[in-house]
Length: 409
Ligand SMILES: Cc1cc2nc3c(=O)[nH]c(=O)nc-3n(C[C@H](O)[C@H](O)[C@H](O)COP(=O)(O)OP(=O)(O)OC[C@H]3O[C@@H](n4cnc5c(N)ncnc54)[C@H](O)[C@@H]3O)c2cc1C
Image (tube, rainbow, N blue to C red; front, side, top):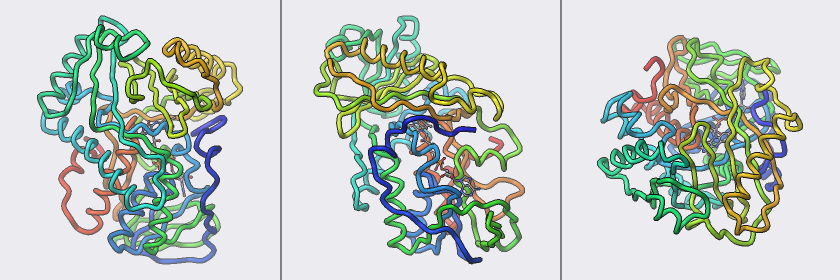
């Protein structure tokens, strides 16, 4: 399956900051993190900050999995609306999930202050809106649920929205708090660089081919036939992590992204906030620090691993059609931005779970192993939660929040 395909943004605008050797001997450690995407990087950062003897391996190079394709919108809101989530899992759990995501946004801000790179991080505002009049009542319900539970939200009707945005809006929820954006590739590298200062050992081009969980530890084999003996293992292998789980926990979509060259103004775009509509599939927009516009959406269902959509190439007619649609939509939304010109176009696989929440924690048959599978639109915030909750589990602290994200829920 092609996790990402095309002319990627982050790995093109950034040089590779650090490279790491492959493992060429058998080793032991307290914790092995498998996967050098954002989930593994965050886990390694938190563990080494707590003084845990940690090793991280990636079968490829750091940050080139799904992380390289991420739009990196960080929002307290989950793809499943709060009112929908409450009806699915109950009020306490639904509200807690939203609150945890909100805290995770500000935890990233704290982490950034601890790193040597600001990773193009910025706190921002966000707008979640309806393009169809028939969808406004559901948004109002969502607004009421968020307001009732203490989220700072404002409802914009059609008229209010017209004053702020140059594209048609029937109604929407405007949030001044709980959203941010970041460069995920720089963030991943900066986290690992910091963890290395805290004694993390990193090996790229080191694939784990076998995992043998034992009562007291876990024995792992690499493709080059070296062994790693770890007391605990965190599996942060992104969508490839599904293969260890017997149940179907996620279904995959391919989402398409177009990135412009830097533009000169943002007329018609209130406070340059993050924008998302409530259509299915939805369209999402953000701005980078160097003033590019990212627009994404046009999701397509992916069949089996051999299906066309699983392996779609970027020059396929389907891909080209999607990019054309995104470009035309962007131009029609912002007629006053005259210099819109596409520079990067790519697609990536994207996982959706039944409740929009990730899978974090232990799984039967894998003693001493923990999974950090941040499936869903909030993948990066889920990586933060995974890193924190799994660090605490490994340090023997009880984290009841894990109940929200457990397998077989
Ligand atoms: C197009 C797109 C847009 C997105 N937009 C957003 C967004 O706006 N906001 C948001 O929060 N999230 C978003 N996401 C989701 C988010 O990017 C992902 O959840 C996140 O990047 C996943 O990181 P990861 O580290 O879990 O996985 P990955 O980045 O895929 O990293 C997993 C790593 O594990 C390694 N690996 C796999 N198997 C092995 C093995 N056996 N041995 C050793 N290494 C192995 C791989 O090489 C890879 O480097 C988006 C995703 C995509 C694709």
